[in-house]
Amino acid sequence: QVQLVESGGGLVQNGDSLTLSCAASGWMFSSPTMAWFRRPPGKEREFVAAVLWGGVGTYYEDSVKGRFTISRDNANVSLQMANLGPDDTAVYYCAATGATSEPRIRRRSAYNYWGQGTQVTVSS
Image (cartoon, rainbow, N blue to C red; front, side):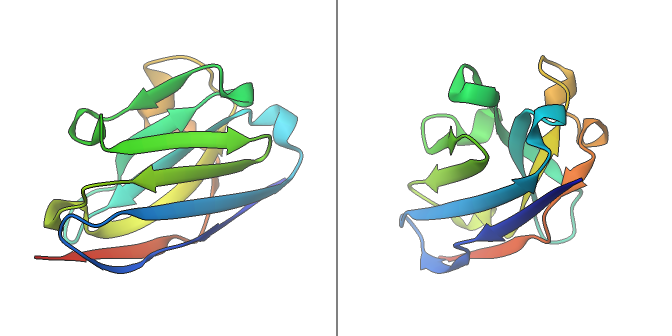
């Protein structure tokens, strides 16, 4: 079993930066890839970014490329978000999976461990 706990969400202004953190515990060797998903208001949960074990590969959704940076220190993963806009408002979830390649790592269905989510609200 893997447990994931997110932190760092909050209310920010348009253009601000924010860093989310996810602390993982449990048997991570079975779920080496970690990712962030988000669920905007009234929408489905969507892929944001993923990082492989050891940080050897990172993947981003197009709308966050150049603004968001995912990184990890073994079982802990962070998401640095810059130049935030109202469209980034969402509940952000940390997730872990045994998948290690695309396109699976971009799919919600590939992830079997999820955190409880943390709210990020960007005011215009």
